[in-house]
Image (tube, rainbow, N blue to C red; front, top):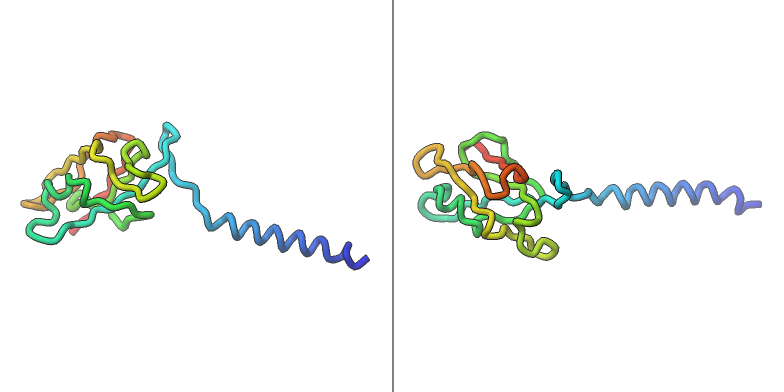
Length: 130
């Protein structure tokens, strides 16, 4: 008799636990073709002109991240979201593939933002202000 009274409470507790456990995992964004999208953030190198067009176009200056804090103003490079086909080692340590060919445009001398990539409309470009 006691077991019958405890079962609904146990079921409720199990349901709450499952909701909490699965809500921590967000599904990765996908593009129109169903490809997983990966987000990268620009890491300005130290030295002279860290936001030059040449530095922005260098894939070595971009690192994988879960999110960026870009504000959408075309002054400085900030973030890219690209499909998996432009990512090396997507399941291990994701890096931008050299085939992405990032295009940068100067907003002022030696300060550039991302104006395009070979991923075309499948990519999302996010720049920022000063």
